[in-house]
Amino acid sequence: MAYETIIVEIEDHVCLIRLNRPDALNALNDQLLKELARAMTEAQANDKVRCIVLTGSDKAFAAGADIKMMSEKSFTDVFTSDLFTDETAAVARVRKPVIAAVGGYALGGGCELAMMCDFIIAADNAKFGQPEINLGVMAGIGGTQRLTRAIGKAKAMDMNLTGRFMDAEEAERAGLVSRIVPAKELMKEAMGAAQKIAEKSMIATMAVKESVNRSFETTLREGLLFERRVFHSLFATEDQKEGMSAFMEKREPQFRDR
Ligand code: HXC
Image (cartoon, rainbow, N blue to C red; front, side, top):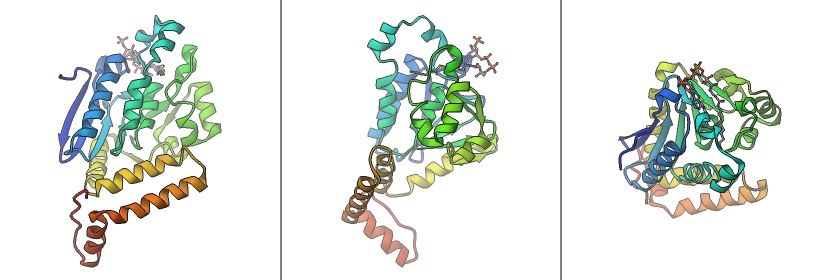
């Protein structure tokens, strides 16, 4: 079935997913999040895809959950439907690497969606925020949790309590984004990073993702043990032999995901 609120393209092993509700600054509604979850699940299942890039428009990655859609909802509505939980879980569950390329506004659910990705590359016009407090509510899909882990308590409290926006420079200083680039180079940079990842052994890239994410779920001791065992397991792959042989033979490795 065709998508209406996102655009999906696969090029050179990279699946580019573009949020596409320009009239609402890519505000997240049920349809968009369902389509995004489906696209992510399909990208995970597609052998041609080795890395995923999620982006919006020059003006907005996403300006949050759709306020018009939410405005009429009751406690019972959001509690019984567990608003957006299944869809965003599908995004966070993808095991292939996902890069968020953020230009313009990444607010509320938009900021939370970017944080579900593995890392964020920001355009110099990017603005991050958790302004739900201005609507009489609060973040609901990671803005008090992933943001706190990413930038610490002081800034996470500041963002969530005041609703102020953080520009790209501050976001990079705080550790929310990995790189900032001029807005017109955002997609070139993000696709370039994705191509680099796509060249690696996918067994290793998926292992890295799983291991870094594990650090958020467990103690240092358990995390280090997990990392060590996954490291050991990579020695069972042909790609480990190929990667190390290629280094010694001074040539590029040809990884085959085996
Ligand atoms: C619905 C939105 C929207 C949103 C923007 N629009 N954000 N529609 N939901 N979150 C719509 C506007 O209504 C407007 O439509 C059009 O997009 C352009 O927006 P403007 O406000 O005219 O643009 P601008 O003046 O440039 O201001 C941009 C902005 C502002 C600063 C981003 O739009 C804004 O503050 N948006 C809301 C941000 C926010 O509060 N996000 C958190 C949502 S709550 P019309 O039809 O009027 O032209 C959330 C909870 C997540 O995310 C938890 C989920 C479980």
